[in-house]
Amino acid sequence: MRKLAPSGIAAAEIDGMTIHSFLGEQRNSGKARTIKPGDSKLEKEWALVEYLLIDEMSMVGLTLLAKLNRIMYAAKHTDPQVPFGGVNVIFFGDYLQYRPVYDVPLHTDFSLPVKSKSNKIATEKQIQQRVARSLIRQINCVVKLTQQMRTDDSRYLQLLERLRRVECNYGDYELLLTRVVGQSSVPLLSDSPWNKAPILVFRNEVRTQLNHKAVCHKAEQVGQTPIVCVAQDTCKGKPIEDRALIKKLLELSDSKTEHLPGLLPLVPGMPVILTQNIAIELGLINGVNGIFRQLVYQEDSVSTDIISEEFSKNA
Image 1: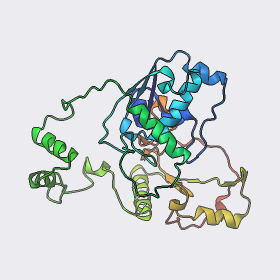
Image 2: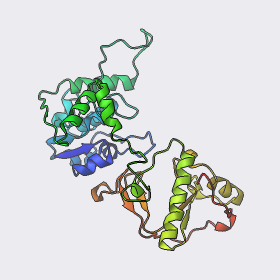
Image 3: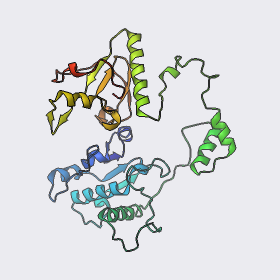
Image 4: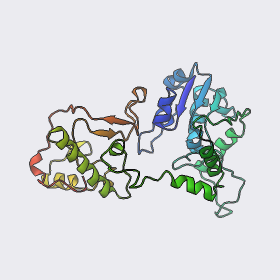
């Protein structure tokens, strides 16, 4: 049995792996796993697999499912007409939850009219999406779970059911207002648990400034000087030696560097959040919370002499 999921958190929950990792697709890369006839490694991976579990099906798109199908029938040496190479596939999830990113949902109805030229020839991607949709339509058993297990609050449960069907009423609105945190209910934000609550903002610069203030506050609390990690920028795999260019790159807004700051301040004991999957089997996944304890590093060639004494506002 093989267990896959579209996200690291979902994969960790079922002790599986992400679909993208299995396909050999790296973050922000369009390169997919190369499928070659007679790939012994691929065949070995699937030799004993009879069942495939796919969790969080709402986040799985037709393009992704089509890629998975191609790999499976190649690994199993079956006719492409045989769904998933003859492997029994079990989907878990709810179509009304999160949609797939940069893909179309599994429930997409291609029979509906679309805004396009009638004589436009379908692309290979669109053809594969239709192939994947035909696979979904061949599901021969559906089990629907109707009992809510996450809450005992009947009124809140009814609200969720109406929200699911886009049928909320004014009473639901009033109920949600009772959950708004106001000054009367929170005397001091420095009190627990509010002092550990995440803060959501609309601009990256505001987020960065808040993070810097939080680091300084934590450093003052524990009586330590913040550790500043300097980004190691390279060009075509080689370290950048131009000091002026290094300084310019370090001062770039992290909105232009995939949210990787040039200067990252850290203090032991501060909370952190991982932003990519490092080791799913260890629970080190995108979105998980943790506490920074110690920095283990090796000497680098970047001198801090080129860095301004004033901390970059966009770092």
